[in-house]
Structures are given as C-alpha cells and as structure tokens.
Image (cartoon, rainbow, N blue to C red):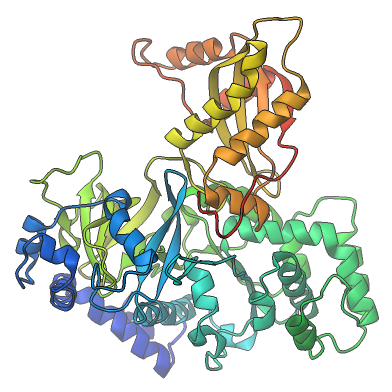
Length: 595
C-alpha cells in the first residue's frame, strides 16, 4: 500500500487531504529506515550525553551506532532497577535522561512479583499521539464511511499510585486517557465515541462499564465499530451485558439512570444522553437478550451496522478469537497497532487481514531498535541486528533505546519477520518471552508459577500431603477467564486427605503469591476469575508422559509441561480429575502494594 496505489486502487477508499498527509508521512518514514534510525540514535545520545548512565560507559560525546553498541551493554529491567528506584524515590539528577522524568508507566511484565516502572518524559505523549493519528487514515483505505457513525469502545482507567518521590505510576492507557490530548481532543468525525469522557475516566470500573454499555445501546444504530484494548475486554463487556441487560432495559424504558450510578460527573453527562423513555428500544433489548437460546451473533443483532471489531487478538489474546467470532457472527477483527509501556512501536498497514496474518510495520522514528536473534544469549561481543537488516522468517527479541533513557533494553517480546514495506520490516508478534499463563494484561512465568505452587503446598504439610506434579492452563471459555492448576498429590494418610477448605486455602495462597498485575486484575479490574485447582488421580502424569512418548518424545529428555493447551492432553487431564476447588476470596491488593 502506497499513497499513489491507494488513490488508484478501485478496492480502496480514496483518502482525504488530511489522510494523504498521514499516509505520506508513513511513506517517508518507511522508505529509508536506516537513515531515520541513524538520526534517532544520534538525537538520543546527543541529548542524553551528560546523563550518569551513559557517562558510566565512557561514550565521551560519541553519537554513532558503532561506538554506542561497543560500549553500552544490553540490559534487562533488573539491571536498571537501582537507577529507576532512585528516580522513583525522588532523585531528580540526570540519571537516565537529560529531560525530567514526569511519570512512570507501569508495565504488565513483572520482576520478582513487582510491576515494572518505565520512565517517561513529557514529549513521549506527542510520539504516542503521532502514532494514534496514523491509525484511521490507514483504516479509511479499507473501510469507507466511518465518519458517518460512532465507535463503541470499552475504555477504562486503572488505579494509579505515586512513587515515594511523588511521581505518578500508572498504565500507559490510563496516562493517555487522563491527558489533555485525550480529554480536549478536537472533534474528528472519524473518532467519535458513544461513551462520554466522564464514563471512561470514572475510576469505578463497574459504573464505567454500565454507563458505556448503556450509551452503546442508546446509540445502537449509530455504532459502526466495537472495540476494547484486548479481546478479553470485549468479551467481558458481552458478559456484563448478559448479566445486566434487564437493568439496562429498565433504564431505557423509564428514561432514568440506575441508582447504581453515583458518580456525579457521569450523572451530569448522562442527563444529556438519557433524556426520555424509549419503550421500543427497551422491548427490543428484552426480546434479543431474553431469548433462551444462544447468544450467537449477539453483536450484529444489537449493533447491526457494525463493520468490524477493533481489538488486539495477537499473542496470548489469540485464544479469544473463537468466542469473538461466535458473538459477532464472524465480523472482521482489526489489530491496528503494536505498543507497550516502554515505547510505541508500529502499525498494521493491512488492518482488515485475518488475525493469523497480522503484521506490524515498525515506525523508525519512535525509538532506536535492535534485534537479538532468538535463542541467542547476549554477551559482550554479541552483534545485535539493525532494524533495516533483519531477515524474513527469522525470530528476534526486541531491544530498544528510548528518548526517556532506556538504553539497549530487552523488551521481552519475540517477533518474527514476515516481510518488508518499502525498507521497513514487518513483524508478527509471536509471544512474550517466558510467559506461561495470561488472561489479559497479566503475565505469569514458570518461576512465578513454581513459587506459587510451593507456597500453597506448604498448607498441606500438616497432613503429610505434598504436590508431586502439576501443570496449568488459562481457561478462557468462561467470562472472566481464570487460571486452572492441575495437582497430583501424594497423600500420607489415605483416610484423611485434604478437605475442600484446605484446598480452597491453597487456591487463595497461590493467588497471594502471584504478581501485582494478576492481583489487580482480580481485585480492582475483575477481569480474572478465582483460581481453580483440579486434583487428578495418582498416576495421571505418568499417563501424560506415556502419551508424549507415543507421539515421539524422548523418554530421557521428557519434562512435564508447566502449561498445556493441546486438546488431547487437556482431555486426558480432565478425565482424571477427582475434585475441583476455587479460591474462596480475593487476594490482597492495593495501589501502594506493588509486590
């Protein structure tokens, strides 16, 4: 896709003058990627040359890539943690960046159970806004008429905290939604939401969800696209509608707002939206949602003009595709951009492609990008690959250097090169490195799961019972999804096995042992359900090994998989379950507690 081809192609909508400007910018950035990358690293090193971090490695004012890569090491979050903690505690000297760190963006990745803090400077918001401004010009090439209606996007702010030094620490989207750029955004017919800002910015997720769903129902014929950040978020919204449609229909029937809404700002904004009773709409919602049969295709039944779903369905979110297809009647799913707390990276130039074909084109002006060939352990002599030099078909771990002071930082994303657009490589997101379980923004790795199992199994010690094997999977057929852990137990006294109360305590202890992102999702966001332990018969994991060997695994090298998704294996495990147990309460979490 180029500007010229877009204008000529009969398959694409002719772009407006504003869109042409954005598309030409994409062309400019992608035609000479290496030139842009040289400029970016030169700017970053020149600006941050007097920082404590770069001085430590003796750059002495050099701004070329060769010197930078020779002297500055590739690092992880744990390597930078002392510097980040000093900034968080109030040290305002030039540690990582010559520009003031104005806030920390909290990453959903974890380190020893902690939420990572990513330093941010004021101008980073402008870079993020720039990438956002490219999304609709690209989408308009494929889907005409989006200026004739509205978007029903379920957007939420999450709980934020302050560091000891007084800097805000919050998720990147919470930062964006609370920014003046979002709250005072100029009118754009291509970006009109059904949800008022007051609903999006309400810290009570239940009131926010209720209001956003109500507005979506009131404006159902105007809705041209539905979305949420993650696929799981959109499914959670559908689940909310299943539970609350009667109350929503009653509000519409009477023209009055439910007493569950207490937020003054929401009540004020809704007084201008819910202005009169609409019995016809209330009856329609009752007839559609009150059917005894399935909710298949419910999205297009309620919002008949919907052209596509705007959700992330790559990586861990791919597990939700079948459910979205079921509820939407097979609507296209658009993955428009690739971003993280560390930096925004790129956009999908073919947003209406199949989820399995999604590739993101890295925008070389966003940061300086390097790539570590996957499975290679970096050493002092490691040669990381430049953005322009990656090879199609190969997998790499993403390494970035940002204006805010991350230098040669391993993001932890594994990407596969699928091709090039002009000279800009396009990447498929493969997975997060070392992540076993993920329902939404949570990411639990093997070490963390092992620690949680060990902590919980201590509760069995009094009875002489211990966990001899375990595995897990992310159950996403329920809304919300939840973690399922399979345990095989060695019970010392067969006449006195652990009872349900003890096993329920084990579930809760596992949750207490998981990271703060998981616990926030359970407590505040309610996007993850109670953890479940399924106890299986003795000998089940021996059967699991036998099955793997029958399929060609080496008996000498076999290791129990700590996470399973292959249907025959899950069927085997479930056929051997002797008892199931759920966490009886919410784990402890507060904005101030990051561990």
